[in-house]
Length: 240
Image 1 (cartoon, helix red, strand yellow):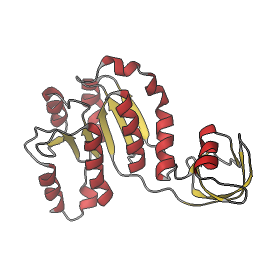
Image 2 (cartoon, rainbow, N blue to C red):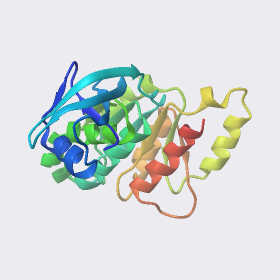
Image 3 (cartoon, rainbow, N blue to C red):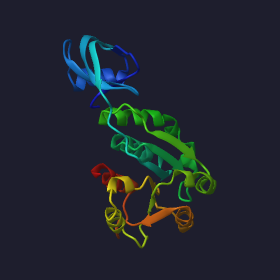
Image 4 (cartoon, helix red, strand yellow):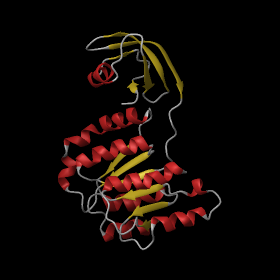
């Protein structure tokens, strides 16, 4: 928790986890400065005016720093195990993904869609925002029917789009080298990134996405966990 994220115009902190963090982790006291941010707004500082076991009162609130820009990127993610999804939500929020579309896939078990963790998505986004000192949450959508989504909605998302698939004939490096031949690499980075869950995409899903504009790319012979793929690939956008 690298900043305390507050609701609009808030001058006090009463969230149990935030108060505990301030008292026990930061060991802050009256008169100390806190890094704070306004949900959906700016980032800044405030001074602790009063503190007890249930609440922290603030004064001299200054919010004068704009939040970091989002990546110009939509991630399409096949629904993984809910515990994995929690970590991915936090990582993608921290890395600045603009939009996340969670889709059903052949290897997404039906039970995943009934998990109570799906109802706590906003909590995981909130944690990610506080970690990375951001205030603007990524947009998250759920699509339970893969084929209608790809055929009816996916084409409207396209700039360039890639699908991570370990058995693709083109490597990610070769794909990037092609982009670097263009005049403005930043402008030609893919706008859409498709990542499978545990076990990856099946051939039908890869073929359907490629029929609608995706380029299939491989990260090499190693089969990586979904979390590793997310962090390796998103690092390419952060470098641009």
